[in-house]
Length: 353
Image (cartoon, helix red, strand yellow):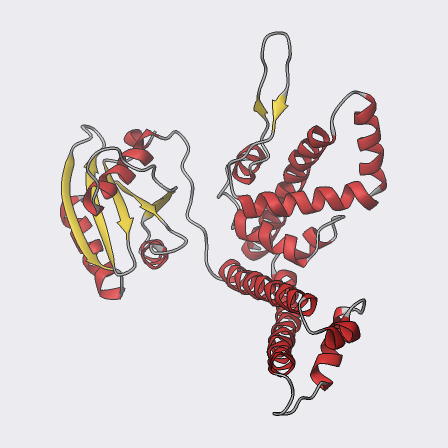
């Protein structure tokens, strides 16, 4: 427990421009001091000086949002040699609520936990996260634009719809780009062509962005110590590998493979009743990481010989498709976690040598 190793616990509630901090005495649980400072370099220096005055002994910082609003403070504290833990999203308070109270609640939440989560590292991991987030946004926008174009083709004038129907997307884009109209054409004909060409240009632009992002993402993953080993696993491509590295972050962030499975939302939850003993899917955890594991499981169930044999064997035992997929995701989380941990330890050994 934190009270056994630290005299003070500093809870933090960050916003975009400010961060509220509160100092708790771990022996008594009493609040000793509070400060609100700007979320910038000068504010971080002020917070450290304030902590020296009000928490001069062994102290731990418990921050909410170390991957967003508190990222800068977490990095500054790490550079200063401070101990920092991450507090997940706090539940909505039933009573009074303000930033000062939330800072106290962050500290009390961390003090009540037996196991603490380390903040995510930046560096290569942050570069992969930023590029992966951008790729996802571009892919969503491109899919939306394609759906808009398909919907517009359905309601287009018949002479335009007849030309475009039943063709591949690439052929449709080429035909739309070659279409012409005149000012004397029917208004619906003219506006439909202009609109389709506008959407086509958007699709071309977003497709070009994806072509630029994908090689860059692949190169970042290859530069990571665990990247090549992850990519060598069946069903793991650059996008899945990127999400694994983003969620795992670094060796020690998850204390065990069971904790990583819990983070991914693939740890089995017991749902037994009476004489029936069973487990069900976990709906919590990091859903992006869960989706990545789901992709690997579905891919292996489709084209991986060992997985297909496992599926057939478990089916004969009476397991449903959902139960088999849940077991596979748990097993995949275990194996990929061990790959990332072993790669990180190997890199640390080479660096030390």
